[in-house]
Image (cartoon, rainbow, N blue to C red; front, top):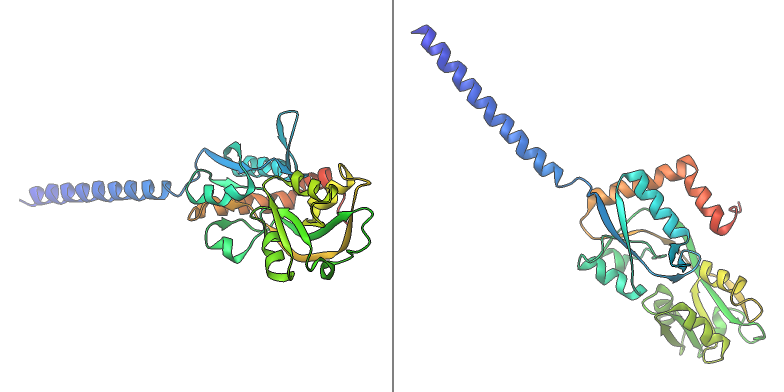
Length: 261
């Protein structure tokens, strides 16, 4: 009788162990849902030099090099797509894209719609005017003027909120905004300082100049579909490692030169 009870107890213990292992398996599957995918769709645009643009049919730029380095460090593949800047956040909201890197300023309003990585670049707004323009020397001189900028950008919001009686002409493509200043249909361009400076040093050399200070200091962040906590964490960890091991500095120096202290 004792032997039979002992066998019954062993059977019950074995059955309970099976149930526990099955439960653990279920928990592992649930945890697995939080793991990274093998591949993510990354969206950018092609007109924000030197951050992202096309060169001989290839995506190039600071942002492009950085996101590839982050993906390699985090251990996932990326499929690159492009869209106009004003289509990036809607695309993230609908799940058309997983990640976006396009000089996207971190703002409280955007945080309600998307998630961000830690900041990866400190920027601000700069004013560009025709080289022979002596009337505009700072932000106060833009009152009542026609100002070219990019559709859906923080600079467009800045014009509306801070410059009285100014007309913001918003363009989908940045080259259209610069051309508007060059041909006189706009008095100035107000946009992200790295892009304004780069354009004037290259295509706009001799026809445009930068005036005034750096306005509305702001950080760029990598945008991520809301709710992807594991992906946000992986990107932040990879970005921190790239800063630590010098890879970020190498990419920065490639596109902007050595940083000034």
